[in-house]
Image 1 (tube, rainbow, N blue to C red):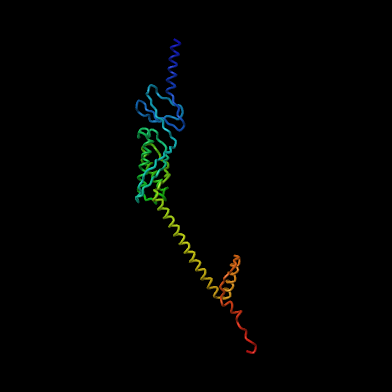
Image 2: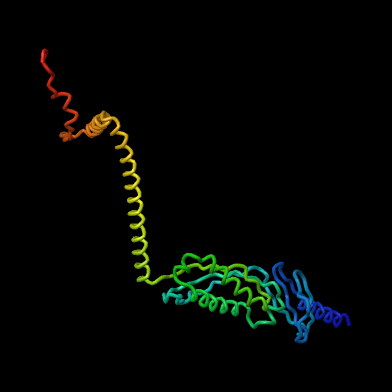
Amino acid sequence: MPEFLGILIFIGLYFLFTCLRVLKEYERGVVFRLGRVLPKTKGPGLIFLLPFGLDRMRKVGLRTIVLDVPSQDVITKDNVSVKVNAVVYFRVIEPIKAIIEVQDYMYATSQLSQTTLRSVLGQVELDTLLSEREHLNNKIQEILDLHTDPWGIKVTMVEIKYVDLPQEMQRAMAKQAEAEREKRAKIIHAEGELKASKQLMEAANVMTQNPITIQLRYLQTLTEISAEKNSTIIFPLPIDMLETFFKVKPKKGE
């Protein structure tokens, strides 16, 4: 009799331990009892399940999942073929829906992300894709969040990681950027010439009021040239400066 009682205790402990589960803080358990889902999830911590297959549990993680969207071939609105990849951040907020409403929420979210990425980027031009990436990220995130909401999933962020352009397009964009820089340089140079001409005109107007300033300017320029330590200096000298030396003084009595 004691042996039989010991066997019963052993069997009872075995079934007890097989009915116990431990769920981590970031895990929840969706329990099906005779095929019907229980209205509330289990966990975290120690939970109890009915034996003999009466209760079956599916674990669902509540942490943010980082989904890498593979590189997609996209034809933009202006008929440029590019390769684009992205990353999607989402988390399960309603575990029961994530298990019941969709067969595999990870696979479904991945496929939806790929098709949405191609659809949205195919409606914009290449310049918009390169310059307004933040706006496109928000637009893709809103579409994904709208379609995954019935699955109990919240898409928190979408980021376009890399846009791979064809070699021909890269060369064309490099030429365009170089031409743009040359245009800006010419505009800046022309603006500088215009400002310099205005300053020279004002300086000329000031010098014409007193001719001696022109001579002083020539002497200053000569000083600047001599500072370069050149062996030969050719400096034009205005005739007006020599009139003082070549002017013949009148004799007395004339």
